[in-house]
Length: 98
Image (cartoon, rainbow, N blue to C red; front, side, top):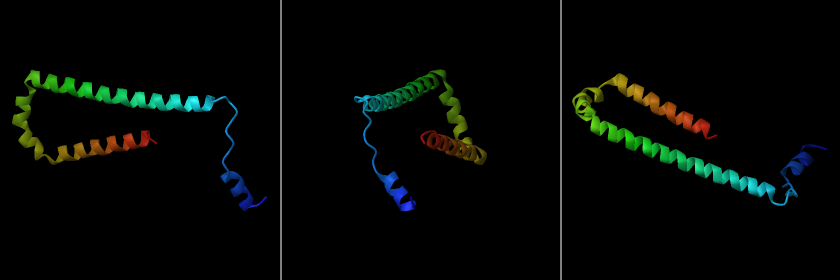
């Protein structure tokens, strides 16, 4: 057997297993679970954001932030820190999705 024979052998599609549709049911259930998990993650993010915005609005923090914001916007270390957090979050999201 040479490389060409091995390539042809490995490139052929395998026959479906005789399992009375078990494999297809398992794959369908996994896909449904992944969809449900993504939906729950989105709901959790939405609820967290709503609670945070409501809490900040009711606590009076908005006024303090409004006084500090012009100074923070011009802060180079804060910009670098925010960029690092965004890059780290994007990398983690990308690497966990693999």
